[in-house]
Structures are given as C-alpha cells and as structure tokens.
Image (cartoon, rainbow, N blue to C red; front, side, top):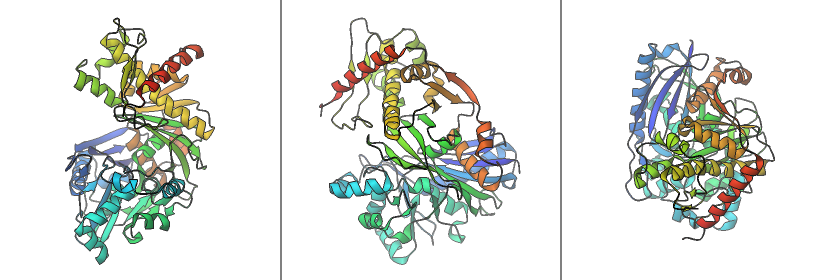
Length: 498
C-alpha cells in the first residue's frame, strides 16, 4: 500500500487527492457544489450534494491514479470549518441545508448576550462570540427547524461540522457510521473548552444545545473507523486523520515548532502561528485555537489572524473598476513602476478586522496626484495585501512574545513573485513557498499517514518539505519604517465613515 489519500472538502468544491510516500500527487479530482443564498447574509450548502460529490471525486481520482481503494494505506479528511450540518441517523438524510461559516443570520441573537457572558465564552474557547462559529448556527437549527426538533426528541438527530458528516457516511452511515470529530474542528464551535479539549456543559447550556447530538472529540491523527467496503472506496481503508482546513495547511507546511507560521493567501488571508503547548490569549483580537493534536501527544496550540480582503481586492480592481482583465496581469502592470508614487489603498470594504476591529472603517485610496496611473494603484493593492498581513503577524508576535524567523506561504497570490518580494521587504523577513502547494490536502494526508505508520514521525515529514522559491528582504529598516508609517496614516483616514 504505497499511497495515502486526502478528502479536501472546501467552501466551493470537494476534491480527493492521492499522494505517494514522498508527498507527490499521483491522482486527483475536484467538483464544485452549489452556493445556496435564500436571503441576504444567509449562505447554505446541500450536505447531501456534498456527499454525492465526495463519492464522485473519490471514484474519479482512483481511476486517474489507476489504483483501487485497497491500495490506500489510509485517508485523511480536511474541511471548511464552522459550517454546520444536522442529520438523522435513521434515514441518513440532512434535516436542513448546512449553514455555512460565512452565514450571518445569527448576529442579532448573539447581540443579546451581555458582556460578562461573552467574556466568559471567549476565555473558555479562545474565540469571540460571532455568527462565524458553529454554536449559534446549531441554536438556530433547533429553534427554527421542526424536523430538527422532532429528531432531537426521537434521539436520532446528530450535529457536526462537515468532517463529522463525511466520516459518518464514509464509515457506513445508517449501517453503523461513527459520529466523531477532531479537536481542531471542535475548537471552532464555541462549545469546546480549550484547556480540557471537551464539550463544556456551561457553553452547551448558554446555546441551548443537548450534548447527545454532538460528536465525540478525538485527536487529529488516529484511526477513527474503516471505510465501508460497499462505499466509494470499495474497501475497508482506515480513516485516520481529521483537520480543519487552516490547521491542515499548518501540518502540510510542517509548522511543528513553536514560532513557526504559515499564511494562506486566498480571497482573504489566514495566518497561523504555532504557540506550542501554551494557550496564548490575544490582546489584539486574534483567535486562540488548537493547532493540531497527534494521537496521545499533547495538543499544540496556535494564534490565528485573518485579513478579510486580500485576493478580493484584486477582484474588485478587475470586476468593479475594470482596470485589469485578470489577476495574472497585476504582476507585470505593478512591475512597470518602481513604487506606488505615494499612493496607499486600504480595502476596508466592510470595516477593519484584526488588529484594529473597527466596523466604522471603509475603504480609501489616498496620496493621489496627477502622476498616479493604474499601475500605481495596482501596485498599491498588492502592497495593501502585504501591509495587512504585516499588521496581523506583528500582532501575533506581540501576543506570543515569539519572534518569527521566516514566513511560509501558500495560496493563489503566492505565484505573484513581485507581491511575495514586497511581502519580504515590508516584513523584513524571508518568505518561503513550498514545492507542493496543495498544503491543506497534504496536511490531512500527513495526519492519516502518521496514525498508520506510513510515515514514522514529524521529523520524516520535515525532511519531505521542499522549497520552490525563497524571497529575501532587500530594503533597509529605515525604508520599511517610512513605508509602514504611511500605511498607518492611511488606516487613520478609513475611520469614522459609518
């Protein structure tokens, strides 16, 4: 059995990737699913459709790799976090569409929590009380779905993040599927105590959620179950790794030591910093979260910061302003000028997130003169990605007291060499991109492989990490400080608009 596979279930698509012993991809297939938006601010997925897509991508990837399920030593699961599904274990059907992490329908309900309660919840969970996380979504399903309430009364309702739903189906579903989750996904629900790594009764009571509907919490790397031989793999394969997507990327980037970090560049940015076995509670509005837990070893924790608008700022230049036709154009256009000519672009389209937390902020473009061109604006947009990332990483260092040695990066915009050079120059740090960029899927495969002995230990995985490109800072400390001072002035101009 020379292969490990990973089921990567994301916000817009599901894919199955098959890796060889050295982490090389030997087969993969990916399919999108529908985004269901019944009202403004509501985002849903059809969990039955996601399960159907899962079966299709598994079959297609096995065919492409020219192997069968029994050739796999194990599979890992990684998933969009916080998205919540409720299903019935007698019928196997979802009781309602899954409520996606982006959904904001529970904002008003959460505004009713008093300050003391929210502080108590944040201390226990490491998370702010926000619609983003799973607990209020579960509460909404119980309060608003007659089917959900009836199934709870009958004892047949099960709730979970998407990893739980997929694990239950893969391990047999109505014919004996297991109902489990891992610590990384559980840590995103607002229901798990970060210290005990268990569901907290006080939190369950706050959100009026019965403990019986929730999955048992396990580590991120152990054998949870075998796949149903009559299922899509056609064989009993160990399911041995589960990690939320950003945590999986940390494992895929082999960030196993305290102080190591990765930043994933997408529509927004997700940055995580490994804080070791210590829970670091943020003073800057960052999230404290479980990084991963391998088997019986102690849990490793992380600080997480997100930048809401990075890649989407480039989409805005393309779709709303029409000054570029594709994101790929940005590198050449921005390279045609040596700097931004004093232009700063702060894309605070819906406020500023960490470390500012100002919902009254709105986007600004400042420093314009007649000499400014679209090339300067595009370069300023790339700089904005880098400055926002610096803001979050600086906050992480301030919270943890752990200096960063380098920054590991992955995601779409890392193919833009100019942007990565800017990031290095603005941070004064080396930026490094891995050879295998599918770090999320790879991380879930690593977790599964460790559980079954496919890989010996994390030292073996570290040796597999190969660099495709490294960027060194070329600016002086004075130039960096001057540029950042301008960014802070631009930030001030965004405030008090709403």
